[in-house]
Image (cartoon, rainbow, N blue to C red; front, top):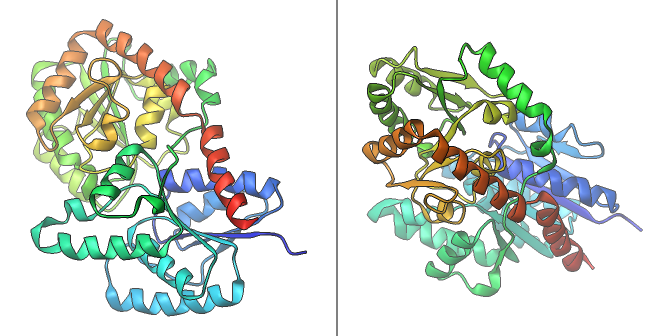
Length: 380
């Protein structure tokens, strides 16, 4: 009897929250006798996937993240041919363009169970002209799948607003491995990193971990921080991550005269020491699913300053677990950042509540169990 087979389709997207979650699910499936494959052409992500004993990484089909209709059509036919022969029990897709191609290809060859990790909808942000086009694509691809596994309640509610049938939407809220956050050694590693980077215990460190892409709206973060520095000479901003906007971010940092105040740390093997080195976490993203980065910051006991978008409202209760600011409003972000820099006691109180909330709600074990149950029930 052949093992049950699962394929995760990522395309050329880099390492991120979805990839991390897929790895955790893969480990559990492998322990239950499944064969688990990843279709990915990103070197960084593939290196992470290959760390899992028993996983196969397939790189023979390019699924571009950006919109290139001709390339996507070619990918569709290559993927269709491969899926017809491979006969997977479950295909799960991640990321926008690769997921659309993946769902349609899987549906066309009769894959029994097609899942999509729903961590954001594009049509509400596509503008007046393109919104109807994206809405049709998202509706059709959602209907082609068995379920859109919504990473939070906001994604489910947006799906309903877009006309996606409720029977196609299932909420499985994101989670993280909380065990490392209880390790007291991380406190020392945070102090060491702070010292190694040249900061004193009295400096106020704002930290951010994200892919350096346009939707993260780093320019708003930098403009807000310029205002913070004007008020607080002890403030510094550390950003961990890499991405296509890195050159533009470096240029704007120079234009704002923040070269000595902002450090771009690149992709780090682990962001946990950075979180334990920091005082406040900041994210200015325009759109997001239920953010792994924010959950990690909460679990580390950091107060979070975040953009006021639906998914973030699931995580940030104003002045309880953090502060919410209007999207793209550098003045609003600066005001929140300055208030926490000026009142460390408030930040610590918020951090205590944030940590308690994260540890109660976002354990990776719960996420894995709920996801694997969908796989097992559908493949039975």
